[in-house]
Length: 163
Ligand SMILES: [Zn+2]
Ligand SMILES: [Zn+2]
Image (cartoon, rainbow, N blue to C red):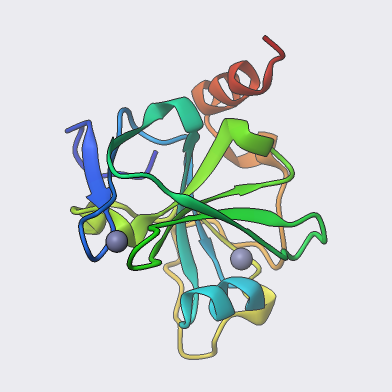
């Protein structure tokens, strides 16, 4: 959604360039997460995650190592990392399984085109991070139906539907 311009695919990758991938279309939604898990995993104040169907992320070069990592929900997340430089490229969370990916926005070549659709877990936001007044912000998580565009809800339902 909140990606400026309509130039897709949008490419990204790791530091050593062993892994290259492309987002084939605009994402479903973009989270800026201020939870303490994301702070620890990113080593900074928040994580910027692009939510998109897994089959709209094309691996162009290399392979990823999937590392099982604890998560806030207790159900764990699978973090896909470059096998060489170990940069994290995306996560799959238990909630939406393997159908949806949370792509680390900062690994996109044109990461500056990505802006959050919502700020979540602002209850643990760093004090110095000032949020813009025109972007939704919630203390913890949120009801998808209240914030996602119709089209993204439909795409998510299709991705999670049993085949
Ligand atoms: Zn690498
Ligand atoms: Zn988080």
